[in-house]
Amino acid sequence: MIIIHSMNRSDDYHPRALALTVESALKAHPVVVLSGARQTGKTTLTRHLPSASTRLFQTLDDLDVFELARKRPHDLLAMGPRLTLDEVQRVPELLLAIKKTVDQRREPGQFLLTGSANLLLMRHIADSLTGRAVYLLLSPFTGGEKRGDGTVPPWSRVLACKSAAEAVELLNSLPVPQVEWMTEVLRGGMPPAVFAETTEERALWFDGFVRTYLERDLREVSQVSALPDFRRLMQLAVHRLGQLMNQTELGRDAGLAQATTHRYLNLLETTFQLHRLPPFAVNATKRLIKTPKLYWADTGLAAHLAGFTDPRDIYDSRLAGALLENLLFSAFLAWRETVQPKPEIFYWRTAGGAEVDFVIERGPKLLPLEVKTARQITLPELRHLETFLTEYPTKATWGAVLHQTDQARLLTPTIASVPLATFL
Image (cartoon, rainbow, N blue to C red; front, side, top):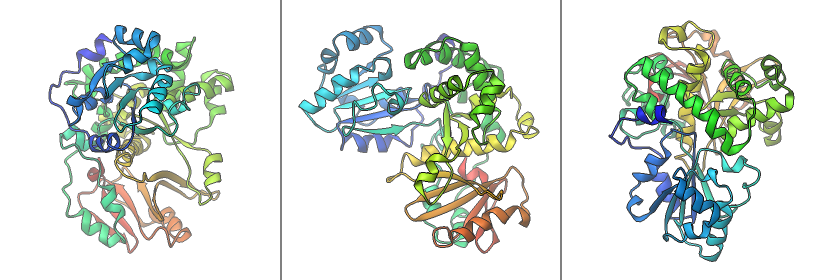
């Protein structure tokens, strides 16, 4: 832990887009659970909420608080009418005491809980707060949050556009940040890595993060006896970014049994290191049974595990497109948490081989998106988007290609070329 905390030197709070959503949830629900991978800034966010001064903050990283939560949880919960409890996954039994307290006195904003594990995926506690809590995910920094303006990409405004021409007009009215996507991939969005002053310093932090994650965080969720096997699976999974998740193949390459591979992947998802992107299908049942794609929560960590330290190495690698997709996917997740009702994000693929990188679904509207590393887009590269638009003409009226361009423009009457940097 020394390495991880020693680099978190920035005393300037960078506003988070999710803060307003958290505050709104506290005004309407007795329990708000703020989850996300360790080191994404959950604790800092809770301490800088407008209502933070009215709440007693206790962290289960403090051994005294940990012991009190484990042995006398009701004494801990009686410390104040409004509590913020940090890293609650360390004592899952505490949630049962919270459930009892809420059932006896149900008021908005009683408990703000943070956790580095997805409580909904932890079988022994998943039902404890059913009907009592709202769950929010804090993703790594977006580009706007890194720059200090506390914003998410303007997907809500883009989705409101009824045509590609309208989207082009909107996007050309917005500033295009001067960012290099390969550099942003390496920085990722975990605050200590973002604020690292050198490549070596960032690599050292990521080494410490992985060691802490393997040796401590995993043990809070489940026992993993063979840590080298788990790390090997992590590295192999990174090399499958943006691909269909083939557990049989992954397990074979890692030298692990299928049951072990399945369990390890679930642990990566439970601790917010890995995300699965489901396929789009009109039939919701088919979405659940078809194979998802695999993405990492933080591109900086993914690039580190893949051995990248120089932006030029990324551009020349076979993972370039997947890492760029992953960077945008992380920004999608951050934006989605700020919108109600939450949009859904998918990929699309047909048996005939047509594929679209992302499909955003919000209400009855679909927006298909292709992501390219190239600066120039040729008409043949649009055929899969055109296939999708033909397949769903009433739901998807236009689509877009995100790539390295300085200005939005029409490629066809229904497909827009969009500056990638606007959404980083």
